[in-house]
Length: 406
Image 1: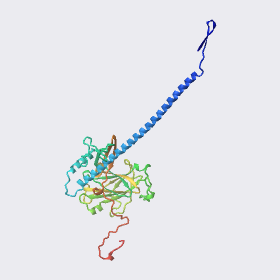
Image 2 (image 1 turned 60 degrees about the vertical axis):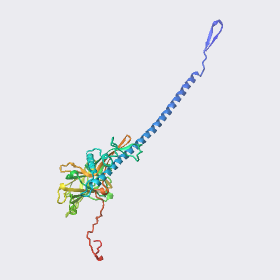
Image 3 (image 1 turned 135 degrees about the vertical axis):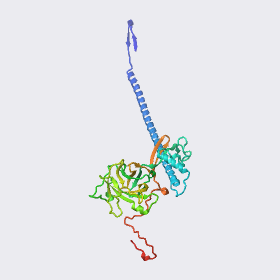
Image 4 (image 1 turned 180 degrees about the vertical axis):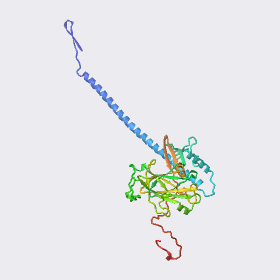
């Protein structure tokens, strides 16, 4: 602002403003806001990338730990299998009159703890020295210095007495199980359940049938979501004195045909597919009523005891073969005369294994199938007699006595 003085002492005040002063001030504030905005944007982008990278690293670490914990559980199952094989070799499958080694008492004590639901594998003779005295864990590592993932199995339950036997059976393959019960408790009924929910995403179909008897179509015409036919053979044997002729007389076989309706009760004295001196029976239609996760269920009743024995001194063997399907899940449950479930003894032991890697735990449950020379199961040996078998045997020193296709 300028002040101008003229005569008589009067003055005039002139105010002069810079034209762009206010405009320049606003431009500076805008620039500051733009810089701040871009700084924040870059910061957000950087933090987002860091979060994604950290999350991926965490997921990768968790995946590695989870797999390592799973591997630890598998190691527990493998050790349980080895312990059970040693127990059967040293304490069960012994020649008559052979005394049991002292370690068998430890085996039997720990197996009884498994029946009660306690962790028992770490106390077995093979592993007791490897288990941590404070925690009971058995370390899992490739060498003494392999501590990076801190792997171990923390609790493994080896259970020889189970409520059922389970089998994922292949089509047209035979499976044989001894129905050995705890304390040889007599068996009154055999429950066979098959075709579990997890085998098809669509509701299972059932097969129509001709009047009076089921039809047996070509395997290529069997619906893909239909349960299989089960061929079931029950063999009775007098305990302690097996006679081949008695086995032949006390063997019964039925074909369980899945149907949309009907009873699931099977009288083994009537439904035998090839009763001695009787006309062969048709397959037995089974009304597929759902039992738990299984879509079909049959109850075998009126079990024939071995010749010259009663139910209390009879051992049973069950053989089944799925037909018309590549695989099916099968469950076998036993009942006594009062309808209560009978436990299997040493037929298909169960292993419940919990593994750890650092602070991640995985739990697995698996059944053990006996194999090799420790087997209590029969093999699929033998020969096919579908078209008949010549059973005439001649011993002669003359070539002319040989008869082809007798």
